[in-house]
Amino acid sequence: MGCKYIIVIHGGAGVISKSNISEEREKQFLKSLNGILSASKKILRNGGTALDAVQEAVRLLEEDELYNAGKGSVFTSKGTNEMDAGIMDGSTLKCGAVAGVSTIRNPIVAARAVMDHTNHILLMGKGAEEFAQSKSIEIVEPSFFFTQNRYDQLLKAKDTNRVILDHDGEKLVKEEEKTLTVNISGDPIHPDSKMGTVGAVAIDKYGNLAAATSTGGMTNKMVGRVGDTPIIGAGVYANKMVAVSSTGTGEAFIRTLAAYDISALMEYGGLTLEEASKKVVMEKLIEQGKGDGGVITVDANGNIAMPFNSEGMYRGYAIVNNNEENENNDTIVVAIYKNE
Image (tube, rainbow, N blue to C red; front, side, top):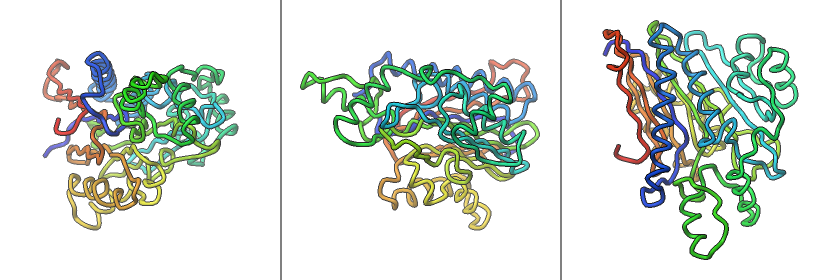
């Protein structure tokens, strides 16, 4: 298969059921995924890099309150927002990440700046925020990230004394509506099984690969908790062979180095992209017990794999037809449920 210009995105995985999602809500997600793919693929079509394309895709996901990243981020146990993001250039292995930030409007932009303008890979908390401000990256008041839906999720999590993954609402909402209790979410996901991390992977006209991931973490998480998203090799990874972005129970992805493991299985084990991705998601993560989630991947030959071990994952891809000047001839595919 020849080289293609491709971008793949995800907006979280979980136990998604058509019976738990309204037609209007489904249309909102599909429209959002379509729009973000349309915007980010233009970078590839215009000769831009995979790195720029994944950054822009994730930035747009961070701007959309439907997802648990940036503006749509969930709350910690103390009612604050702490966000993580990571990005990696497969052609050079350069990477950057931020963790536990609360005032950076787009954490993925800060992660890119760490990669481009420091000798470090991961900056956290206040240090990351001060660095971002020094690079004229937009800083906002913490209240910018407040959304009522996410706050209601926190109240419910506290009420039930648990930490819950994002997109954790619609089935619980329907169960609670029967008992006339609070509606905490409009999301079509089982209450304990939605992973709201967002991400993107891409290959550009030069054959270079890149990956980016961003998240608000888990509702009612401990202050200071950091998951897999900014951990290179766990939540995000790219080299000259493959690019990977993960979504799921972060601790399991860290224990298994899930994103890197896909690359290792391909390089040392001779597995195809599809085989390696499925082995990690459908076997190794499941062996961790609460290793729920999925990945999006693209390899140097333009193959795509998007396995997940839950009922669904917000996902999609765009393939640029580089033989056609008209971008309307590009391919865009979006999906939510299994078997789509």
